[in-house]
Length: 349
Ligand SMILES: [Zn+2]
Image 1 (tube, protein in one colour):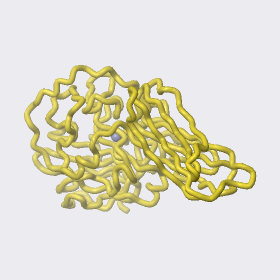
Image 2: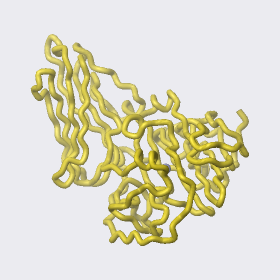
Image 3: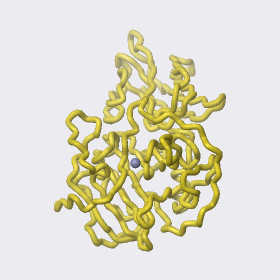
């Protein structure tokens, strides 16, 4: 494949990592939400730009940082962003999903203005990762939608770009696959939207710069289905399941989990949640086929917001193995005394 290296000159951003469980910025105090209306922005309607299902095979990890200062706030005045983040990050569950191949789709009709390929797919945190050398976006595509509007797609898989400079594309057209190139440590699409060269928050394009609003609707430039898919959530479960042995974040990220069996050493239930808040209390309960609680664990209240957080609990396999049947686990997050997230999952042994 022909490599077009420096055609993305002027591409900004890309993604700093979400980091390990403790790498997220501290939530900044919300300033009064002014939400004053600037001039309404007439932009292209944007379709959901990844061939994945939010809530099943992908999640929104980060929104645009609307705080012009050293803090970070998303359009809802929440902490689902980080300092200077200039787009939306749609994250796959793990590297196994990335390896299987997930298409990135043109968000609106337009012409391919620029692209870059040839950047290695490797976590920026890997010891052998090469220097970013200004290529934070990694492999990327920019589509010109006319009237000064552009969308930019970052961290694409090397060699996966399916369009050429100058191509006309329709909305929904596959343009590449999600990769791990540039400034990222997990597979995701970073989508930036610009008008006349300036970054636009597609969730709140007409909200005054530097402001946020707790009740902002968030449909912004999105087509109705995309807005619905990416509706603001209190955090999400990215991965959940059962394992035969204790886990590491790396194993979950790789997507290689040893499934438990009747005679495995242990029965472990695990969860990796994203976008938790300071003060959140997490609980995980495993229930046996007869309905009895097998084991349960509670985490201390989080000291601050967490971009991602792994939590597992389990029990040693009794002599003679587990009784066959359906074992279930329920993960719950309590926030300010209320249930913020609840998810139940099961396995048949
Ligand atoms: Zn990003």
